[in-house]
Image (cartoon, rainbow, N blue to C red):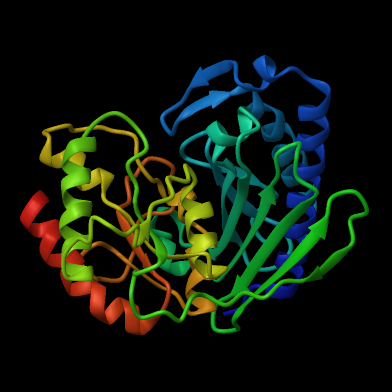
Length: 332
């Protein structure tokens, strides 16, 4: 069976993301913040704001041009939940599915508060049976605020390691970026966060987080600030922080919390938010579900995903049993 041309796909996705970054930055500099943050529509995935709509057109235009020489299916927040077919069967190399979150971290970026990320992953075409575990390559590009002068780009191919560059926004010049997760074997004096962004289950998540930290640190020293929390409203951004050595542990159990509260349908992390988990894994991080099992989900825009990311294997070996037991105790 023919295999995907990883090198060509990485190049194509990096160019696409660079165009999205440039267009978005120009748009943000030329428009008022009220234009970026206006609500355009509510989709099955998430609320679509003005800043999201700006990049959707760029994404589709690129895919239309790509479809002249390649057959693939685009699955993305903001488009038809069943995906959009580009090209024709038999055209180009092996068919694939492209899962995209054009802007992961919209809420932080649209207030010019914190950078967001453009996330993309490619898996061989298996129809609706295609899953996150099938992702063979991933690329993510930082979408900076208007106050930033640099942007990070991370990418990986399964089994070939992860790579990164830092781009000067003014000149476009790249320079190598070290992609080394923390090798610390404790959470003490590091960032460790349990996602607790929005209304709904905040008290329950807070109690779970306290229980995990109490066990991981052997208690609480009220005279010291020993572990720090960073509520970065971007799942892809959270994984990048761990891969880049800034954070040591991230846990997102919102789907389990909402289920515990009796909510049948809720907004939480979706597969497109976690599509670049391959980059963290190839960098040496351990990405699992909250119970320590391999993380997987359909390649869609509606499935809720709970995940845990540990900076390194030794840290994971220490924390994973604690996380598993406390999640079961609080949310089982």
